[in-house]
Length: 262
Image (tube, rainbow, N blue to C red):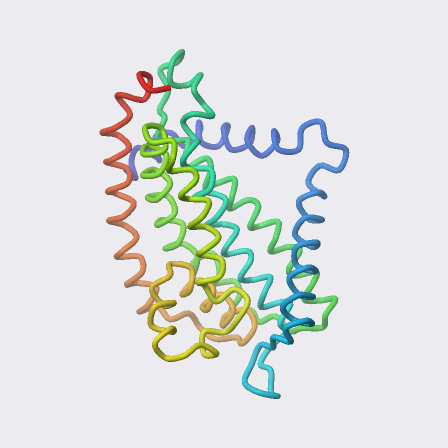
């Protein structure tokens, strides 16, 4: 799996560049639309949850950080996951020309999707830096660990994307199911709230959400200046690697019938 990705590095880079450029082709605003979208969503969520529902980031009357910044960090992690998983079931169907007309390494398509999502997350991080500066919310240098913190999640995303891309080609209902699950993941992860605000029993279940640890560790590093929990991230990576390998093997096993069902 790893050597296959390495051998196709040049192709991955070319396809990723084309994918990113295609999103803004013919648009006068270009990349600025992505920035505007992030800011609008952040403003909306901050108003609803921070003002109307009076959510605060901390305990009682002693907040430990800016709610808007904490929300933005959570959105970056969630969008990285949601963008890949949402596109996965229709990934092969949307690139049917590669299946029918060309001898093409289809397994690179999920990797391209992940690279594009990582690029979008990078742009969102730049917006986050600007928002933090505007809100006078301190950012700690431990935030530089965020790419490492998100690495296990990216490995997991890759495996899930391979799996859903294969399944979605054969079972079209997978796309509808994934849409519902993404909505559930949004509210069952500590995106709009701190996990400590939940009852003890609920905290245990939320910790099984694959987005919980990356969100908490990213916030702890950037907002509180804490070093990552290397033990927890190590366990996460040990789980993510087999998931990625199984997703890749399943994709390779099923790809032989893609042309017959498209």
